[in-house]
Image 1: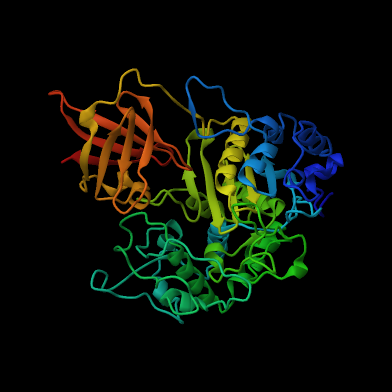
Image 2 (image 1 turned 90 degrees about the vertical axis):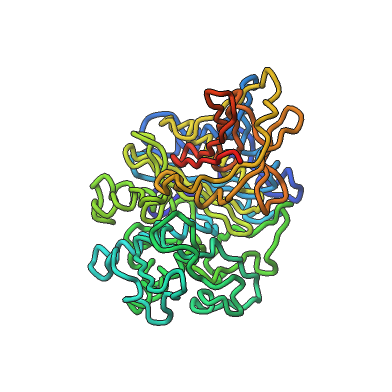
Length: 527
């Protein structure tokens, strides 16, 4: 199947005419595990640049972040990991030189059907919406309709920034909102089921029914630290709508979707079935949910309401790359550079999160609504990139494993596996104890940890040969894997590395906690 731009958007199973994309059993709703899939896709692509085909890595290249030193890489196939996580459908697009060269689907849009996923299938992409909202805002900045560093209260009409004793005269800018440095709270929002009323944006911001979340209020003074805030993005949405007199749905269509040829994408909520080829929602058991319609709605469209396809989202990633390289006028190059430069003390630029160095430097964002997990990543120096879309609640770890396979295939050194070791002796018992955060470490160094590891103190426990970290308010401690006698790691989407510090007198003085990918470090002193 080919879309109107001539890019292959096939269901990988359909290319091989196999029954594994349909039928009524769980086994029959996943893709065939065959290396010929990706080869057939590439052979159909007359304009695909020469070189290895990254999609071939999905046949036997999926892996976790952390692997024991004595173990071989598992080399999982996409098919077996879809079965493992009970995710019925996946779509993937691959970019080279800032252009989408492959957009392929695996599995089905709905379990127990023959409705195959392809590169044009619509998925909810959660917080990836924030990057598209940011691009919409930056296009308006480029046109002189908005200013990055002007107080957004100058634009807001329906709602005003809420003063408080801690922030008596709030001044927040679009730059702060897009980089999650505004000081505003509310990390994310709940989905809305079919039949539930959607609140207005003002009701969302004030936490009034039928909104499901708390009111968006200041947690910190603006500009002081990185605190991921879907509430802040909702303020951005209201600001650009009030400033222009147009809805985000209209603005995104005019400013992003039409210029980039994203013909399937929309901020429509609720999404109408008439759009066709919608990947339906599935729970952690792989069963249909959000019935009878088959998908949820999202009141906070700018933060989490985008519906898009692998092909369209790939076009978006390519538009950002080409603007950064000065090869396209979607964004003026200085604004594209600003978008992909961290706003201290955040690990975000103006919309995307940033990581890596040199040619491996990349911008990325994950999206997670109740039943959909998605990921996008682009390499602005080389033009490589990919997007991954899934339609099951179990897709979080699957997305990471697919990301690792594609990053390995691209070969720019991003997301390498971390090898653990086996401790030759048990962990020293004096690691155990309570440690307190050293708040004197500057926020420019703590960065992402100020958001994702927000604990004034932690308790270290030695349980047999294992080290555990207990955090206040968390029921289950973090289990750590050894990297050395004094260094341990906790595996997840982002890896936390713990280094115990023993001084020249032989005493354990503290432990540093770091997120290597985010270049973030905090220090906890021994009490």
